[in-house]
Every structure is written in structure tokens, then in C-alpha cells.
Image (cartoon, rainbow, N blue to C red; front, side, top):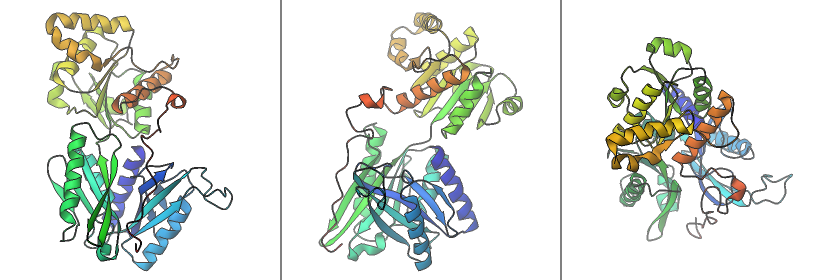
Length: 395
């Protein structure tokens, strides 16, 4: 997420200045590849770039092709890369057995939308969304290449699609993915939709867009510093909630995105928007306040992760006391409580505890086991996609 936030910041600055650049996106893969569809980089006219789309093997060639695209003033072009080249010296040298297709898009181009500007809107508004991009076409629909539809969770949309029959199936495919995303059934995060009308064909990449992770940290002690620093390094939105004035908290934690004063934990929901991409760490070292915060998080929010710093017995005591008031309702909610916080990686220092806690949050939010990858029998990113098929013999 940090890479995406940096790309969005660069794209915003380039768009504001009207500076010509190219957005390169991995849009289709087959076999084993380093990055999945949706990985992006930016290339300016002077060759300066941001982001990565591979392990370092493709960036040089993509930069060269991007500069050529700018020189030719072509709106978009699809590049295929065979990563299965056995020649590790003169080939790409990845050691991967796969194919990656990269879409180059020039920006700004009149009448066309920048995909990074569209993604930036999703993150700013913290909305789920689906971004549809036309990634390949036959000659009849060649002017559709690189066009987009952004469909947001609130029902609004932005697009640069042309008038014509492909627009409706693109919208419908995006709508169906958004429904799966809302229901928590969109596991892979991307899909390829093929659209055909007689000999005319196109393929559309559908990307599920999630808001960035927001981390609420309740506490202001020395052990909060590494949590803020590490979470910022991951590109998460970090909010420190304490009992000092916001200005004092901001001076103490300058890397935090937001510092908030909260005297009464039961008023949390009135001041902080919490969604299913929000995790909470309770680190006040004050029993009564931590119990109040735990109660508020459990029964006024739907955050999927509530991390309680301290011994297991401490958290169990809080839950036992809450059980007198909430009974069966507590049983239904207590699976969201993680105490003691963090994965079992042998922690002692504040930095080690921070690492264990953030790794656990990452696993919980992505539905992973947190077991070593060598024990995983399935591919790391889900089912390995098949090698791409050409649209037609003439494409």
C-alpha cells in the first residue's frame, strides 16, 4: 500500500502540473510471475520513474517502451513479456515460468482518464470500488484500448468509455465484481472479462479496489513509537488516540497521519469512522481505560481486529467482567479480540512486539494463517492463472 500511496502522490503532482508521463500496469499474467495484475509504475519524459512492476527485470525495457510511446504520441499500447526465457544471461533472467502483459497509457490525453487519478479517488473517499480497464482489442475496437470505468460502492461512477455496445457488458462485469467484493467473496482481487460482438473482441481487466488499512492506536507510551513507524512504512493510515492535546500528540508522533484527543472512550464512534479495513491496538497500560475502549470497540464498531497489549490473563479478566453485562452478545463478538497481541515470533522489545502485532493484523485482514509459506501447498496468490489466449488469429 505504501508503494500505491507514493504513486498516487506522484500522479497527483504530475496531473496538477500537466506533465506528460506514462502509467505502466501489469494487466494480465500467466503461470508464475513476480507481480500480479494491478502493479503499476510511472515513467516521465526524462526517464524518471516511480514504482515497480517486477523484481527489477522489466522496468528498464518498460521505461524504454514508455519513452517511445511518448515520442509517438500513442494513447495506449499493450506489451507482452515472456518471463519463461531460459537464457538467464540474455533473457529476462527471472527464473519464473510465466508471461506478463503490461499496458502503457500516456497521460494526460484529452478525453481519457488517468487510472491512478481514479484510484486516488477511492482511497481518499475510503470506498470499495472496481476499476475496469480495456487491455486488448481487435482492430474494430482499437480505440477502446486503455479506456476505463470506475464503479464505486456508493453507486457513483467515472469513465471515459466510448458510446457503443461494449459499454454495457463492461459496466455489468464491474457491477458483479463489486457485489462479490461487498459480500466478501472476491478472493483473488482481479479478473479478466472477454467481450465479443461478431468478429470484434476485447478483454477487460477488472480490479477490486479496497481502502488502505487504517490503524487506530490507543496509547501514547514509548512502545507506540515503533508501531507508528512500522505501520507508516507499510503505507497504512495511522491514527493515535490519547489523552493529551492533539498538538502535543502530533509533536510526540510526527509520523502519524492523525492524532486525536479522546477523554471518554464511549464517545469513540462519534469522533472516529471505523470500517472493516480498520484495526485497533489498545496500549494504554491503564486497566479501566483499556476495558472501556475494548467495550466500545466490541459493541459500537465492526472492526475485525482488536489487539490487547498485556498478558492473556488481563484480557480474559476484562472479557469476564464484560460478560456480566453482555452475556451471549459477547460470545458472538469475542473472536475479534486478540490478546495477548501479536504472532508468536519470540518478542521482548517494543520493536519486536510492534512487528509481531502488525504481522498478525496483516494476516487477519487478509484471511491468512500466518504459517510459514513453505508449509503452504497452494500458490501464494491463489490459483495460478493459465497462459493468456490471443483474442483471435488476427489480433
